[in-house]
Length: 369
Image 1 (tube, rainbow, N blue to C red):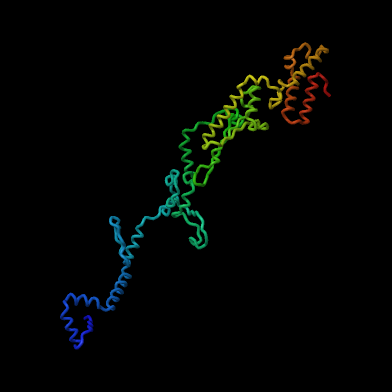
Image 2: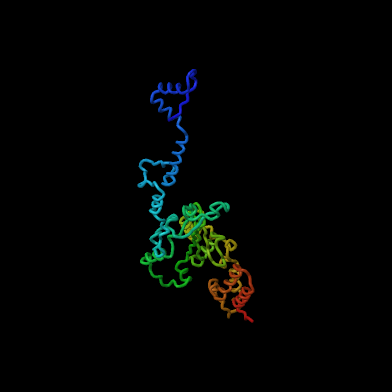
């Protein structure tokens, strides 16, 4: 029974005062008063009993908050049931993959890296100190660094083999007559060089991949003397005299295809402009040409005059009674013109000078020692 203490009543005994107060209180008041004045020993024993029961049964200390419509199928109420639930969870795919599987079906096309589908132990990233991630580089599980870089899991040897088998029916035999590089250059004189790069960055497009180089030999182009000289003037430093190669390199356009079209346009425009002859070009002199021009040089006129004067006093000369055109058609004169052009256009050498000496002696019908 609850203990009731009443004070402030004078002239009465403690027991009489207590009984008087109890009679005056209603049963409801007595009930409330007994609850408020209950001993702490009873509450503490109940709490301890509840905690003991929770430890033995495995029920969580706090009741979980369940969202309406998202209730689990089975409410886990014990540690044993929770263990069984963990065993029923689906195992990661990469742990159950077989080594005999067909990888082309697992990863058929290009895609972002999926750690659950790749049975490889991969690590990517960096750690700041030994305490971060226990000093180990992060693995592939949930690693966002592996999502940032392109992968080639869709271009493995089995993939390439299947691609080749699929494309084989569209291939044709190698054309006959193209057995060497010279044959290929003869039939395909224009050479185009491009490059592709694997670029790890915010964009897979590498700026260097748009560069296009178009090459063609000057001797492979159909040009006359005038077009040949004019083309050399137009291309300038793009012509390499040692290799006889004209090179156009374009990289101003944003894409590779645009640079291809622009390079071919430059080659076509320069070639057509070389054949276009303006009226004022007839007045060009020998000094206006890049290479030595025998037909425009004063050496040609002097050679003809010298040979005609020699032939006047010598009836046995091969130039006797010959006109200018006939003299220029002689083999000795053609050889002399070729050697002179070679010396002017190329560097002087002992071999070229010896050839010049022999050609002069032959042209003047002099005996050589």
